[in-house]
Image 1 (tube, helix red, strand yellow):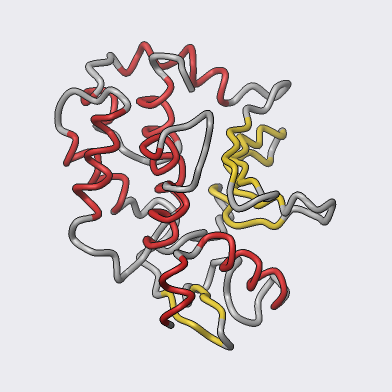
Image 2 (cartoon, rainbow, N blue to C red):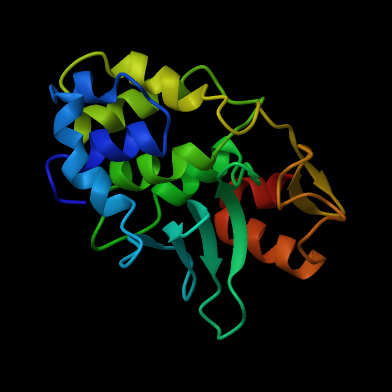
Length: 214
């Protein structure tokens, strides 16, 4: 992530922001060297963020032959199986997060990544029909913090409004746990994940104020 081309490459390929290279004053052709690393079938890049201990969120470039994609996966850190949150591919699953969860997770303590970096890693897997207007400003500020030089609001809009995989999703509490109402999300009530897994995800990601006042 310290590579000068990382953010324009990630935000374009994973986030779907076509104007990201221009915002970082990068020629799109120059991104080929790092995109080749992203899609290397012999060395899958993984970007990890600590969450509430001992959990970690992994963003995995899954480069299996005939089964490539980008996975957002929660590692409970307890020895139990990892929990899928989103799969960005032809047969996509997601979104993974509501907007308040992205903001809260971005602000969790991290010795290696800034809140801006955490936010930008999470935004591609977020879709929330109740997202506030100021979300564009917050993402634009994060873009500037990681080196974008121009058109940060345009890139922010592209990241937040990408329709490559899903449309905005409603998030509501069902049986005292936050779930997505979109048909393709793993975090759907009565879907792929168990009630225990849904509760664990929500407890790790959601803002404390939301848990206290829902």
